[in-house]
Length: 433
Image (cartoon, rainbow, N blue to C red; front, side, top):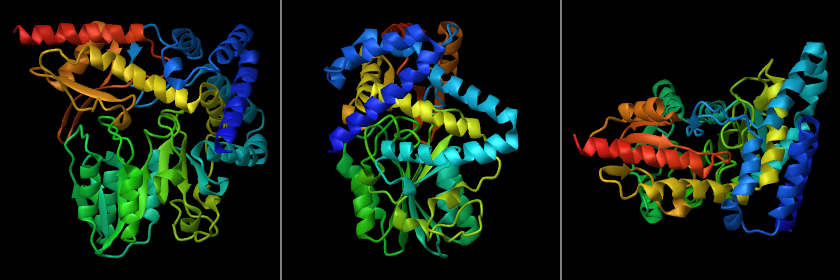
């Protein structure tokens, strides 16, 4: 039954995408019908190497010819259908702002909630639409009821906004932060789980876990960490900024009690769109970040009391879900892993190169971080951009010191061939100094 629901959801997503694209570009829509029909019987692994299909996907984006964008981990571009949807809702809002925004678009959040819940594998009553992962997760961090001396486990490799939020609670409320530190890449899930479980004490109340470490792309064994935390009576906060719509999972499968994600990353939704997940039984006891009339209500909508917001951004999330489902989560995951392996395997033997990302396919996906001996990370990133027009992200954080490369579904192997050539040339020059 689960597989049937998933198939029907993807079929509905394809129909929604193609009907929208038919209004924008009829030829593109017709080609889409052909391509989606052609790959219907292919496995995700087979589809990952079907360049005709991914060339069609690339045409859905307004890709700049000026740069090769390999920093999609920061924020991803939106396909044309999402851009057009946002423009349509924006124009509608401007025809009569207080009428269309509050009486029409504000009421349309419920269909979006159901759509996102279907993708997240949970109940609609557990999903709130927010603006980004930071807002969603800080709602949880500042909303949890913790007493002085209560312990929270987190790691040095978590995202800075979350770290700073927990530090503020430590300073303000006297909670105790218990820090873990990981040497990445890590190929031993047992060791990761053991590090979390060994840090748990009778005062542990919360375990904060980053599903996909944004610096390197390391996938953490979340469900096993959550199981260990729950045995001790602790709650689990999941940072899913880089896992949602990149990996194939549901929030209930992870065992987390709370999760936050940015939809403008791997879902390719409008900039400044995000989502909060709270397990139904936990909603009533979590304070909202923006107070409403009933802050102790068990209604998930209490976390959406933001006042005036970008309704066009919210509503165009629906087009992003349609586009994602048209491709299919499994196909997308397989393609992203294929692209990461495609370039990284070609430079693995380059003298002086070092990787902060594992090559184990079940522990990483699109994100990959590397450095070259003798070249500062900032200078390496600058050379890739200035000499080869390749946009990446320099990462110097804790024990990580390298350039993060993040392709997306519109990235083609020919783009990555240029990256491979650049790495070989830069490394060769560094070795011959």
